[in-house]
Amino acid sequence: MFSISTFFVASIAALGATAMPFDQVTKVLPRDVAHIGLDEVAGEYVAYRRDGSLYGRFPADANTAPVVKRDATCGDLSIEQAESIPGWDAINQYADDNWGTGSRKTVTNPSEYLDQPAQVCVTDEVVELSFEGDPVCQTHKTTTEGSLVGTSGTVAIGVSQGFNTDTSYTVSQASTLGLSSTLEVKVGIPEVADVTSSLTVSTSVTDTLSSTFDVSYNDVSTVTITMTAPEGKTCSAVAETKTCNMQAKGSIRYLATGWIWFNYDSKTQGHYKWAANIDNILTNQDDRSSFADFHGAMSSDTHTAYQGTCA
Image (cartoon, rainbow, N blue to C red):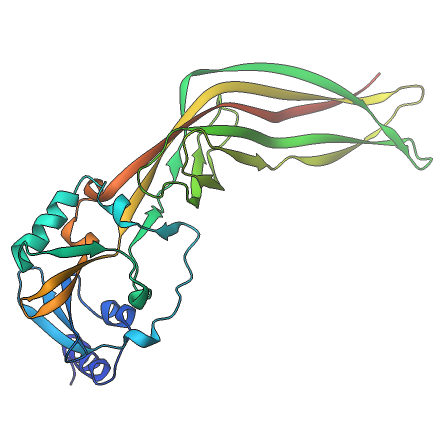
C-alpha cells in the first residue's frame, strides 16, 4: 500500500517527466527548499534545501510562462524595494555563503519568469483601528409624525435604525514596500461608546505619503411601526441618534514574498542563475515587512432607540 510520502515522491517524479514553468515547480516543492538554480545548458531547474543538499531536478520551460493575474492585495516587488527590507542583508549574505561574492546582478520579476514573481502583499490580518482618547458623543432626538393607513385609524411611522460611518483617512507615513501601489486592505472598526459592535470593512489604499482613502459602512434601515390612533389624537415617533467623534489611527503591514534572482557573470556551483526564496530565508515576518501609518477624524451615527406616542 502506498504511504502519503511515497505518493508525494511519485507525484514529483511524474511532474518532473515533462517541462514545467517555474510556478509549477515551486508549487510541488516542500517548505525547506530555499533556493533553485537554473541549468541553462541542461534546461533544468535544480532545487536545493536550505542546508545545501540537493532536492531534485526538473525540466525547465521558460517559454510558457503565463502573465500572472495579481491578487488585489498584492503588487510587484522591485529590487529597490526588496533592498529596503530589514532582512535584506541576510538574503545577500545567503547568496554570498552559497554561491560566492563574484560579479552578479540581482533582479526581481525577470520577464522570462513572470509566472513566479517577487511581490509585496498586504497581509490578510485585519488592520485594527485604535482610538486616541475617549470618543466625544452627543445624543439627539428627532420626531416623525405618522400618516393614516386607510380609514381604520391606524397610523404608520417610519424610523431609522442601525449604524453608519464615512471617514476619510490620510497616510502619514508610507511603507517603503509597495510604494505608490493601490492594494485592498481590511480595516477593523472597534466598538464605539458601547453602542455598536466591532466590524470589518474592505477598502483600497494607495501607499503614498498624504494620500487619502475612505472607510465607509452603513447598515441603517427604516423600520415601520404601526399604531392605532385614538380619536382626536396625533401619533408620532421619537427616535434617538448617538453621534460620536474620535481620532482614529492604524498601521498597515506590507510584506515581501516570492523569489530574488542572483544572476552571476561566471558560473558558480554549476549555474549562472540562482533564485532565492524570501519567505524561507526570512522566516520572521518582521524581517521582510514595512508599515504604512494613517490617521483620521472618525465620525459615526448610531440610531439606537425609538418610541411611539399619541397625544
